[in-house]
Picture 1 (tube, rainbow, N blue to C red):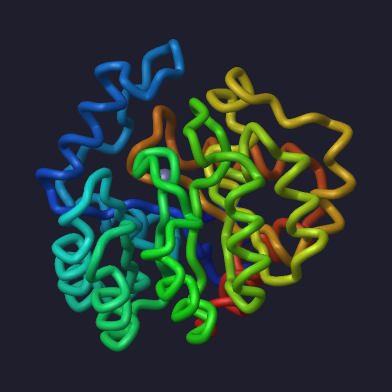
Picture 2: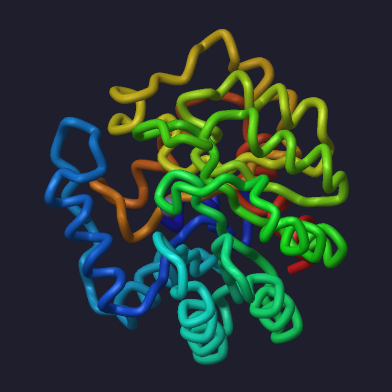
Amino acid sequence: MAAFWRDLGLPGLVDIHTHFMPPKVLEKVWAFFEDGHAGVGRPWPIYYRQPEEERVALLREFGVRRFSALLYPHKPGMAAWLNSWAAGFAARTPDALHSATFFPEPGAAAYVAEAIGAGARLFKAHLQVGAYDPRDETLDAVWGMLAEARVPVVVHCGSGPTPGRFTGPGPVSEVLARHPRLVVIVAHLGAPEYGDFLSLAGRVPDVYLDTTMAFTGFLERLAPFPAALLPRLAALADRILLGSDFPNIPYPYLHQLKALARLDLGTDWLRAVCYHNAVRLLGL
Ligand SMILES: [Zn+2]
């Protein structure tokens, strides 16, 4: 693993899309994937099922210098509790980016303000699992605050692995039109709507895309990335961020890195994606 970033002359990696959650929640997420509920029509065994400290140690061993701790609620009344757990995790894990989340519910603006005040520097919104409309009026103040504070939000807004009512480029584009200073990181490179989300990033300078699972054998079988889009991926070199979905992946971590290298977009592209873009965006 270290050879990958050393050969690029990097001091390590920054992974914008990793998950750390309260152990009981993570157990449920793992069971969801392993019991076939993700709807991908094939097994999704979790490769990194270790206890939390071992998972943190693994990322450090891989040379991941900073990583996120993305969590997300699937129902109301959960986000504030997840955020307090995440604040504790960030406090005891100095190389983890303090992450937070929200749900359209009364009180969302208050707990998001509290999380930003407490130092959260990355949010996660999961439109597929949460099954909510990002244009919901209870979220207007939330997007407004994130835009004002320039705190990026990783949004799972693509319709992979299965479409949701509010996935796809439409709803999130409307949120961006209403909050032009909002910094959005489109998860999974927008799979399977790669072209639409690359176009969105082409139009809106504060839209980024993370590489999470993209180009891996697993995702290529479900939602192949069209080779015709490679030049646009190359051109957006300053807007693509390494993400992995560690630990909830059905293959070893190195597979994601090799999948990016195989695109053959050059070492400058890899250096920007695997390290420099995140350092610049998050002021690391
Ligand atoms: Zn994820």
